[in-house]
Image 1 (cartoon, rainbow, N blue to C red):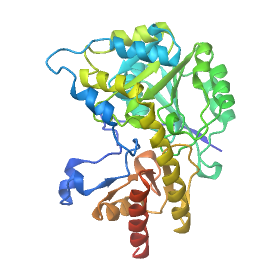
Image 2 (image 1 turned 135 degrees about the horizontal axis):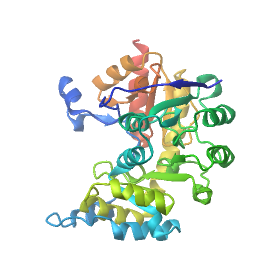
Image 3 (image 1 turned 30 degrees about the horizontal axis):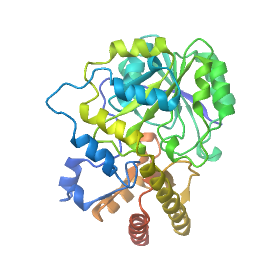
Length: 364
């Protein structure tokens, strides 16, 4: 059964993320061009031509619009929500920290469904809150027990509950009924933050917007994943107008750059690029799963554009692959030292990955 546990990070402790680290590359005598990056879960086609063109036209000499009004209006129309229910941020990470600042503090509690994205814990800890977890475990396929989560909610009465769906790093995607049970348990005592950053790559997505009627749900989305805007930093959330207003008062001026706003607007008008990417991911994902099975590796069922793979010594395998010009995510920081997370890239790139893994495992 999943267990409820407490955890605390030292204030200011850095959160471990995927992506290439310049200092580490230099130690190995590598540059970014030398490495295929399977450690960050972004669109395998990269940023679209239309988005790059729009970003290049942004006026770097002028301050960006503080409220990202034009982009907010576009999202409001696209999502069929009120304008005052949308908040644009410098990536979803800024929005996570704004939520923690607004809702948490000493003697307030935060519940996190883990193992998951480390910024939830980092933000809650920096806000001085008590941080509690309901951990999904391997025997259950890393799927949480809804009953265990509800018991934790009823016992702790958290001000914020974080659920990443599909979850990072497991790829587990819970259904509408699971989430609705959590919202009912939370009631008016707190907020459920539903991070849907990987929904664009989910194989059978359900419409989470209907949860907004519950009044205690914040929908969080990162445009860095589906539109490959990690370098621009862009995300948004949708929530009740009072919540958005409270967060906006805490947000620094000009936190979303003119480049990011221009890129976001263009991305919303370039759905064709995302549709092609979904097809590429589906093909490469099926190949990658089959090859990893052939190698005798255990793969967690994933609805997202990445896979959690049990390899034994994740840190050692990562080092060996990096020496061969391939980066994967060591999941030790998630509390999973026997696992790596592998993003789904193009088919030819996945073929290079599996060939390198076969070579490493043969010599291991």
